[in-house]
Length: 371
Figure 1 (cartoon, one colour):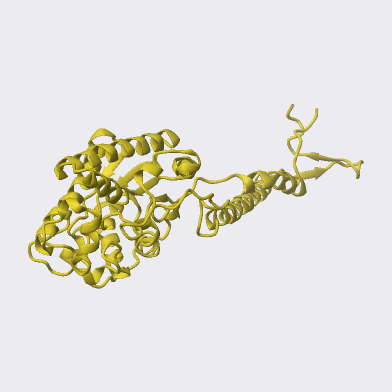
Figure 2 (figure 1 turned 45 degrees about the horizontal axis):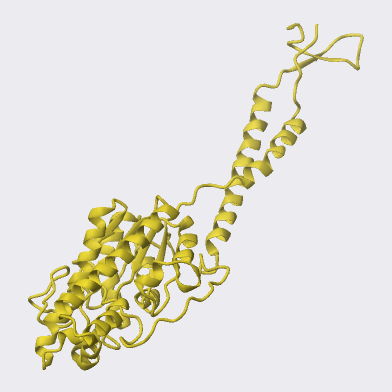
């Protein structure tokens, strides 16, 4: 009769550690979401405040940014050296969300050219909207093909802070020239509404696009009685003290906008942390971002530039390093548990042995009679 083979303690430890490399290299699914920012200078100049606000509310969220100051929706809708669509498709591969901020830089050039041709002002704006809508459809459709699981969010900016520099805006948008500053505000603000309408239309057309209305955010932050987030006072511009150059908000302005963006959108999409977010002069009514002009309205967009090799993670590729380290620690911990369990099992089920008289060298298990 041959006894069942018994593993001694050293053999069981050996078996356990054979599995250690397998456990250590097994990658766990990431526990965080990735947000990609693309578009013009609302994405570049507002980047620091966006990261700060998002970090306060959801520090586990990772943010990558490939926005290009001065870029247009037309440029983001084409690939190759003349555009940014190829870069966008690559960057989207491991993203969960895309915040796209474009269209503001297309408007001045198209409207100015149309005005010089003697076309009716309303017809000029209609033609602009047709062109922008086509560009935006191309961008979001291509983005969806690149990553079908990504959600795209955008808004038509907040009203500009043009009280300090209305003449420069009217030069670029002559359709709103009415001879005085007071009458130019409703005209320029209606243009912002038309951009918001494009986003609303995209959200109705595509189930992977979300539109939010931030217009009125900065007016509400300064206590304009007739304004609220998503319900601006179209007879007035945004407060100029929240703009650094009439078309780009100050740091405080961006904080107001991104706090509102969190309240209206990100709060429902990301896991919030308990970190406090004290932001001065903000309201908790919703989102707001200004008309997407990146450099002064008369500036031309820069040519496409190659992206650095680590452009997918401008925060220093900390994502992969943190993930690898946590995976190694977790794998080692699991292996240690396995070793302990196997060691305990070996002691629990170990059969006592007896010596047979007349043969000091032969040891048989108590269950040696089992076949």
